[in-house]
Image (cartoon, rainbow, N blue to C red; front, side, top):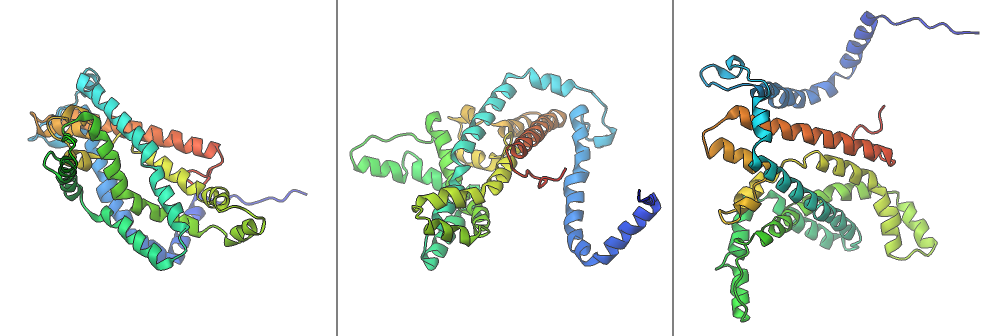
Length: 318
């Protein structure tokens, strides 16, 4: 016997939706400031992306400026400096992905193995503190340490070794980027993984100990496996920003000698916008190009995470 179900009209669906919202009004009111913030500062400014297809005239404003179609993008792909900055950006971010991304994971695993709670909290505070320092301060620290007259060269001279121009050598610049990034952000990022580790069932460790597992086996097969979904999500988010980032860091660490090795896409946008006659349409075209590539990389990585058994950013929702 077939059970006939009555179709719900769009009016009834809308009424039920408003009933549900009113029923949970406290939750929606709590989320309202964040929703307004995103609308005002994230969605409304998207209208400015039309500058990528316009010749901006200040007296006419964004909406009154004339359309030029794909002109800015044609000029963009014909600029050798743009192609070079894309290559530098990809190289720096891919190497950082290999070196810096695992650092907070390893730090979280090591902190989790500490049995002295007070000592663990002290270390967490020490490792997290650099995150709250601006890149202006960290840039000054790095320059004071590695300049020709800095601490490192002073120690080398005291040991009878020759001085090395760390900040004036392109071969040393990128390792300084990676090391300063790990020092600044690894402790802060490890908090996410420590939170994920705290959600692992403690009984699994008891069973592993009962079965005679070594000290390293639970770390690999229980702890690391338990935080793998978190690692997958963080990797997806990292891939979603691979064409950008590092402006504050590179701007405060670079100098004229190694400028050619430090011109990422963000530095390229800064140079063409503020260090020569501004062309806001052209600059917006570069930003739009970066955003589109980042979005495609994020979607691709998210799809691969789901394909290999992860839940992805949407939690496996179809």
